[in-house]
Image 1 (cartoon, rainbow, N blue to C red):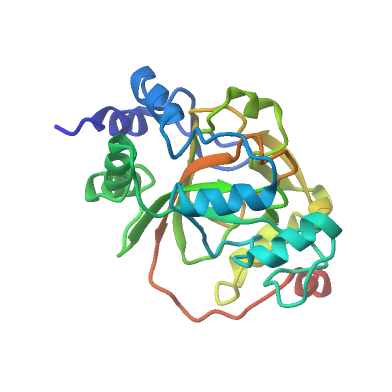
Image 2 (spheres, one colour):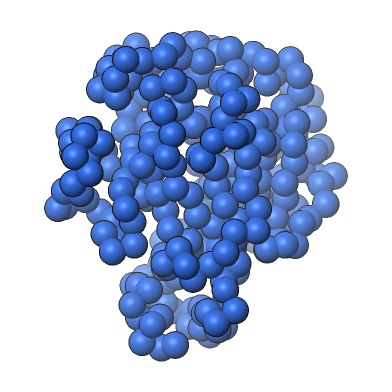
Length: 282
C-alpha cells in the first residue's frame, strides 16, 4: 500500500460543498509528519532575500525553480522586474491588459533535493491519484494528469473565470512555509456571478463550441478564499466554477507555494471569446 493511501482515502470520504459551486475543500490534508517535513524542505523553506532579482536568480540557480508559462504570468524576468520597479506593463505580455493591473511569475520546481517532495509529485502524477479524482467526480474519457510544485510571485493575477473547457479537474494544495500566509492577500477566491451577470452561465452552457473566458472583477463576487495552509481544493471546471486570484505581498520574505495540478482532456478546436463578446450578447 502506498505511503499516501490516506490522501486517497480523504478524497474518497470527502463530502462535496456546493457553494458557490461543487468542490471539495479539506483542511489538514497532509498528516502532521508529512506537512512538517514539506514546510521545512530545502526547496520550500528558502531564506529571505534582499531583492526580487536576488530571489529569482537564487531560486533558479540554487533551488532549481524556473519561470513556467502560466496564465496571468510572464516568463520574461527582465520585463517582470521592470514592471515591479515602474508599474509599466510591457507590450507582448500575453494577457488582457484591460482586465489586469499587473502580472507575476510562476516558478516551477524542476528537480528535487527532498525525497518526500519527489515521492509526492510521483504520487500526484500517478494512475492511483488520477483514478481517485476521476471516480470521485464521475468523469470519463481519456485524460492526462500534470502536477508540480510552484511558487507564485507578487503581481500574479487572473480575473474571474470558470476555466477552459479542455480542463477536466483542478486541484490546489497550499504548502506555504509560513502560516503567516493565511493572513495575507495571496489566495484563490471562489466566486459567483453578480445578479445581473448570471445570464452568462446560460450563455456558456448553450454555446459549447465557444471557449469560456476571463471576465471583469466587478462581474463576480467572492464567496470563499482558500487561506488555510495544508488545505486542498478540488473541482471540475464547469460554467459556474468562477474563481480568481490577485497577489500583492512581500515575496522576498516567502513565496506563495502550492502543489498545483490538473487533469486535461485532449485539445479541441473552439471559438475564442472575450468578456467584450459577452457584453455584446448581454
